[in-house]
Each structure stands twice: as structure tokens, then as C-alpha cells.
Image (cartoon, rainbow, N blue to C red; front, side, top):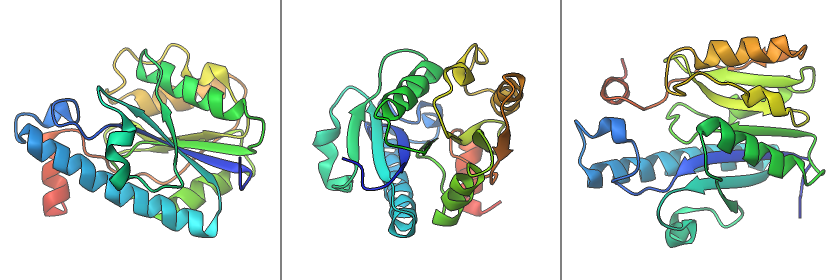
Length: 209
């Protein structure tokens, strides 16, 4: 099944306007939110494929939503391996995806990313994977206090234990980094990038400020 000993998991909702980027509902219609999501897919998928061209890995798209990923097959690169996210909190779902992929026992490194990181380039992914050569885990922060990537060399169940009550709050990155260290594990910090969650994020993206 695997063509390489590394795996990259992309976590994403389906581009359904009523279900995606709901915090942007005050400034974007459902149709506009769906279009934004598709644009973010195009951007993230290109960056991932650019990375994969040099650093071959298996790419998983773990999706959630009321539809089916196959309904959007024209937007999804055919080499992506499609998996549906489980139920539960974001932490539960990330843990489950990491567990499933590591359970195949064919990967030395696995990283998981979101899909709303407009600055993401192949070099950012390469940097994060390289950090796993010398660390048990890697985490890459966003400017709002969250993180856009988390990775590990072996499945560490406890990384997602007792996360902050709200996964969208500004303490998620710091809490997770300290939690990893409290488990006696080494953790590298990769490139900080910004994501698009709120109207202010969208304004910054449009204006470049």
C-alpha cells in the first residue's frame, strides 16, 4: 500500500457552505464560504503535492461533513487516500486518525495538518518532517495560539488527553507543547503560520496585513 515510510494526514471538512468556516458567517454567505473552502483545498493540495514530489509519502485526506468525499472527487488528487473522521471532539478525531495510520505499522513519521493555512509551502512541511529525525514529536503554531501541524515518530496516545475545553482558543498550542514535554518526550517547534478562522483572519489575508 505504502510507497514511502512517511505519511501526511490532511484534516478537513467537506466544502459545504452551511458547515464550513461558520465563524465567517457574519461576512460571507454560504456560497462564498464553500468557494473559500475549495480555494483553500486547491492551495493546500498543491503545497502537499509539491512536497510529495521531493519527499515521497502517503497522503491521507480525513474528512468530515454531511456529504461524502467522493462527491468532490474532481477537486481531490487521485493519489490521496480517503478516510472519514470518527465522531467526537477534534482531539478525539485527531487521535483516532493518527492511531489508524500508525496501526498499519509501515510509517516511521506521521504528520497531521489542517487545510486553512494559506501561507503553507512544501518547505514548511519538509522542515517539520526533518525535525522528527531528532525529536519524538513536532508541533507548528499559528498566530492565534493554535497549531496547524502535529507529528510524531510513533503513536503517542496521550498527546490528545484532556485538551483545552475549546480547541479554538488561544492556549491550544502552549497547552499541547507543555503536555508533550510533561510526558517526558522531546518536541520540536516548526514554522509559525497564520490560518483563516475569523473575519479578522480573512481581512488580514486579503490585505496582507
